[in-house]
Image 1 (spheres, helix red, strand yellow):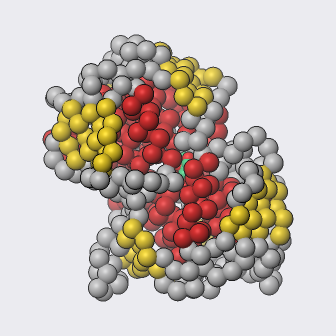
Image 2: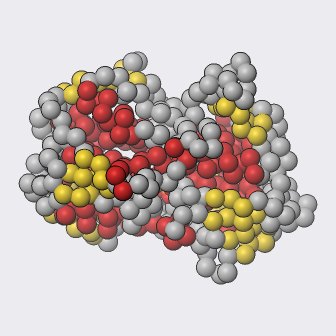
Image 3: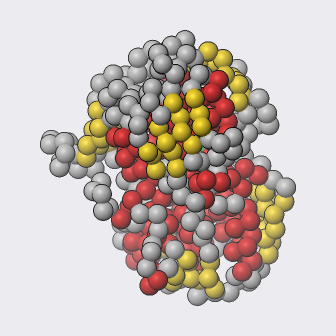
Length: 449
Ligand SMILES: O=C(O)C1=C[C@@H](OP(=O)(O)O)[C@@H](O)[C@H](O)C1
Ligand SMILES: C=C(OP(=O)(O)O)C(=O)O
């Protein structure tokens, strides 16, 4: 977690590593891939731990750009996060100790391109009475923010965003703290708007009644994850009415928690077995989880792979068959890039629906996927709310990634069977994986990553 940790950097800067020759698979795979902790869980645990009554222990958190930005920001807001070993003697070096402190303002927060940082932290900052300034990467300034800022205004905070509803902006909490009460927002562009406000609900004076008004909220499992994490720390949440959440005001208990592996990040590795044949095992796959990535089991099965979950983890075996799929991915949009890459290599067409909101992700993912799959000879097209992919023989070429970690891993997957795929800026994978190229190479060598 040092200041010069390469995991903190947005992507590669040097010309030599701008293009990464995606390795082709020499034969069937036989690998065990240990996938680092979940981004979504790590950043939720960090936030609730920073707001808790006493110190927390996070076991096996993800240390990547998105989570290190969260750590940096929480430190600026008054919490302390210590790495085991060096900063917290007696604690495992892979674990973090979070010591909460009163939330203080006056800071300038760098959100990078992390949706969880740019959405989850403005409500935390609104617990301070001095302004906090937020900014991020160029693309971060285009990602939707309006609903969170709108919700904060309804709670009595002062928000200065120049009326744009985008980064950069500043947030200043009202004297005496956030009052709570009813808040109405339209969270149809991102589930993170709901999660963000729920995470501070217990720290409002009256508790928070959040109501969503608009087209359905995407990525529902991520909202359920937020509710589960809040319940883990003793916060009372009523989510019995669809589109309405009530969070009671009250104390937040500390955590001692093992972070589950990131199931969405496991996607490209598991998909590799479906593409190249052989088997890939991901140890520690939870028997039950709120992670949207768990849907991969069903998707890979439907696309023709053999999928088995046992006590040791999840095993995916390629069968030599790879079928297209017709899928509503509204609940798990972050899986779209890996499924699109699979679809481009399948034997029949794929239709992905319910993912119009991906236009506001790290990049406009629908446009990026269509452009890059087609640049390799594929036939993909955008629909109003998704993608149509018709498999075609692909050829090598540059696969551009637009600062999107999941574009880079999708390019790597295509490169397994398409010689000559050059993935631009593979280092952008550091957003959620500290060493994707190393893990990919280990998988191909058949050694445990
Ligand atoms: O809350 C979270 O941790 C996330 C929610 C989802 O966002 P959207 O609802 O904006 O898709 C997901 O795609 C993102 O990767 C992580
Ligand atoms: C959409 C994603 O990230 P973020 O948390 O930045 O929204 C993602 O990881 O696919």
